[in-house]
Length: 68
Image (cartoon, rainbow, N blue to C red; front, side, top):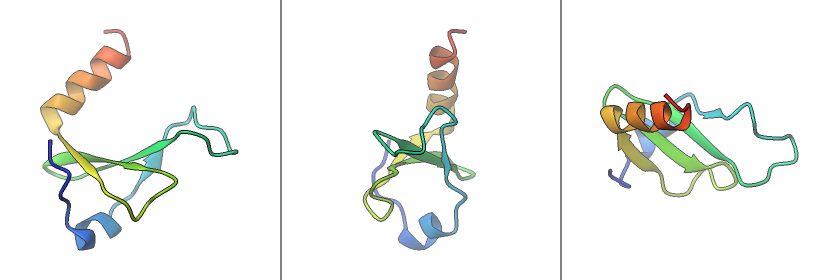
């Protein structure tokens, strides 16, 4: 994982929030995919730091979270 992500790359991405997130905000994260990693950021601090997770690690996380 790598927290250093180019600002120019991060601003050109399509960020997505979970469909489980409510309209009132709360404790939400957003994700965006690149060809090398999935980026994760705090929805309340979009200009803050981003966490880069490798594609294989992200796929494993999604499988675990889905209970597969």
